[in-house]
Image (cartoon, rainbow, N blue to C red):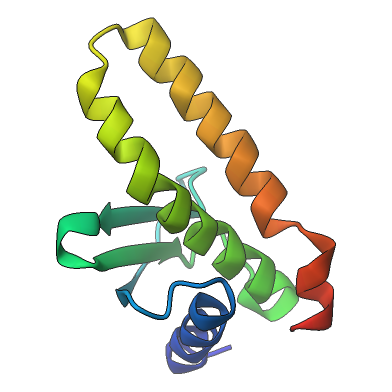
Length: 118
């Protein structure tokens, strides 16, 4: 899958996941030594966000939609949790919030309803 095709799928899934009102930019890196497949960086005050994919880790030929939905779910959830994170000073509490966000994102991105939309 080309980078252009990934961008089109990000747009498609962004609209299906209710993020059509955000300007979502897509970035690519190639770092096979990293364990991080992707990341999301929301900027809710500007109604935009960025998703980044590590081409050294993600196999877009095999499971592109799953990775795309996962990063978009991070973007969606982070729009809200980011606000709470700024209010919390305790690092232990921040870690728990981060773990809860990861669990929620995984559950959202793997919802069976997406099988019918892909």
